[in-house]
Length: 204
Image (cartoon, rainbow, N blue to C red; front, side, top):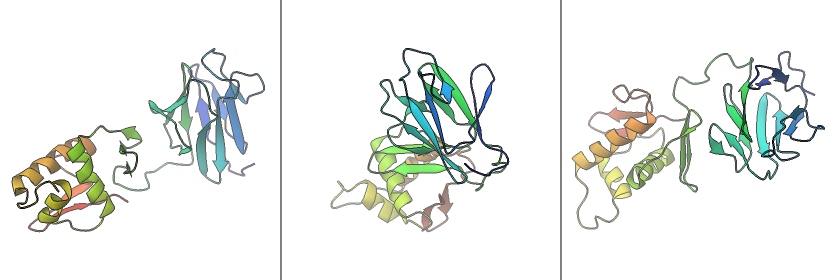
C-alpha cells in the first residue's frame, strides 16, 4: 500500500468518492470488486487501477464492452491525470489526484503515436488530415530543433520529386495544424515560428 497522505479518488455520478488507497483497485459488476458498477454492460471484473508510486495506471481487463478514457477506448495501459473521466458501461467515474496541484509544464501536453497515427492534446484525441499528421510527426521527431521550410516541404511532400513545395503551402499547413493543437493559434506555444529560419516544436 502507498504511504501517500492523500490518496487519489474516483468520484461516481452520485458524488460518492472511492479512495484509491490500495496497490490495485478493481472495478466491475461482481460484488467482490472494490468499486461495484451494477450494469449488464459491465464485465464481472472490468478494469483495474494500479498504483505505481505517485502514478495510477488504468488497465482494461479484456472487458466485453471496453473501458473508455476521455471518450477514447483503452487498448493498452494508460496513466491517469487529475480530472480524467473513465467510462465503464454507462457509468462515468472521474479521477482526482489531490497531490497534483500544478501543471508540470506551461505547454499543452502533446502525445504523438506515429505508429498508430494517434494525436492527443491534454488527453483529448485530435483528428488530423494526412498532411497535417505527416507534418506533426516530422516536427515531433525533431522536436526542440529548428526545422527549415525546405526540409519540411521535402518530408511532407515527397511526391514533388523535381520541385519543392512553395513556402505558402508550408505556411498554410502550419496554420491549419496550429488551429488543431494550439489553445490559441494566434499565440502559439507548441509550434513556434523561428523568423527567417523555419519552425520549432516545443513539446517535451
